[in-house]
Image (cartoon, rainbow, N blue to C red; front, side, top):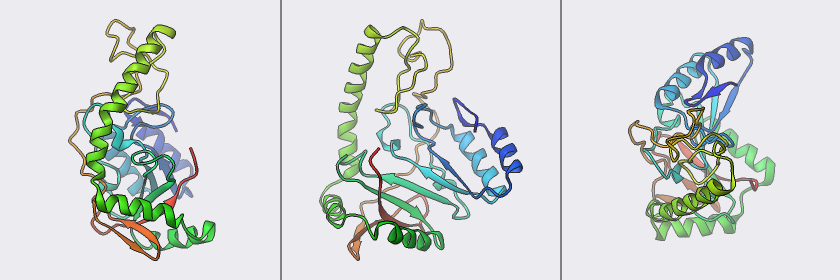
Length: 247
């Protein structure tokens, strides 16, 4: 699917769905897409949702890096725009809490939620009980949002140090300044290098759209040795802990 600096091309998306009417789902990473580093604009997200709703297509919205924004303002998630319960929102603790704990989560409504539980049981019975209990205890006793706010300056310092080193070692047109710790794309670093040629800078460093509500609440509970989480983007959404393969 063709994309540009604002995200997935809505014209190309419409044409593709018309050409393949049997399409059932689309997998997307609207925030800091890997490997391009692109973040979808608010208008492009709205248009995307209009198209998928018209064609009755499910959406898998993966957001592993969204909470690690180093510049700019968060943009509302696709899940927050979901009026029909057709967006499955994915998140992971491995990027914001501890890389060694391969614990992720899904926010979804029924009947998709119940089907996902069955698929999970068929795949590996359940996620590590010990890992879930560790995450649950941490969330009960700590404020993860506050901890993320504390680590962002550290990530920003490391990013700046890396880019400074790459400025010395790499050609001038090789890099852009990412708004997240990763991924780092290979477009020109225009934000840091105003004299550089104006090209296709794919990392959006200062979106102007309104802040999105957090997709996480501090409320957690353990049910059948499985940590569940609520999602503010849809009040009726259920969330289930799942495991993520090492990336």
